[in-house]
Length: 101
Image (cartoon, rainbow, N blue to C red; front, side):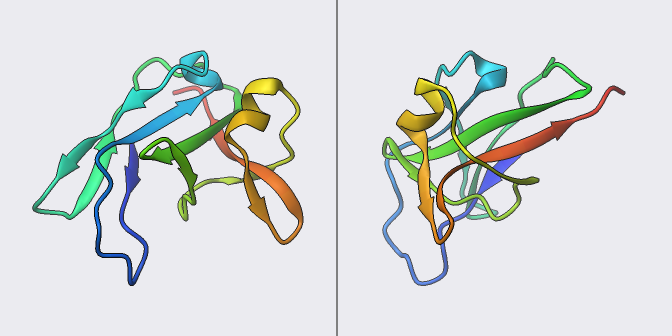
């Protein structure tokens, strides 16, 4: 499950929040707003296991930080470069370590 909340101090909610990554073929998947938890979430089934995936979260189409990611990676593909965020160490995308069940 992917979950995202507004950063501390940000009060205006985005119109859309999406996840995009290697496990979606870099197609955007909308996340649902949970007003009770004040968060957006989505469950993506059948993510291939035993590998590391790269992904990004988008709020109103713009990359946003995911404090729950498994790590950061240097973007290498055109899709990753399209959605990268800037960090103190340069551009990065998020990592998801998928394990077999």
